[in-house]
Length: 200
Image (cartoon, rainbow, N blue to C red):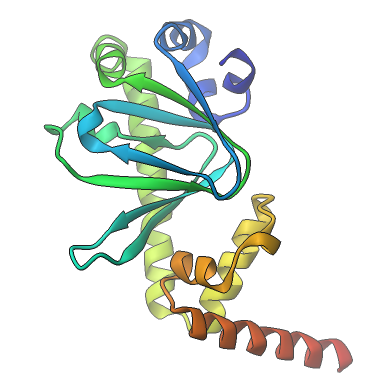
């Protein structure tokens, strides 16, 4: 984990001493683009994304997929286990890039959270930033047109070095909470507008 500690905001925020404590309980995982990883709340694990971008997904009671969040380097998963009793809620991640994860037993996080003020501040800062990002994203998505949603998602993925060429319109629709047909129409409208602006 030593190399990736210098690459993600969470690990750099806790300092080398606390990094060493975490590393001793760490299990490393890597994912290739489009690879899935099941992540159960009841598994009592916490994950740090040390490199890459993933989408977090869950299934609705009627069996439909829903995108919960776009997560990237430095984000945490499973931290609810620090504050709440584990549930049977199951979600999964899909890698959009090459992804590296560090997995920890929740007990390792709980011990450091209770013993170190610096560690607990880092966890809360990470969760606060993630909540702020999610709320801004939610408010934008509620007010934006289909074209604005698709354009914003494509721009965000490009900024995070995600190769969108392998993503289908259905994949983009899952992220933007639109159906495939709507995404196709939105992309055509975006290309038409770009062509018009380019020839103006």
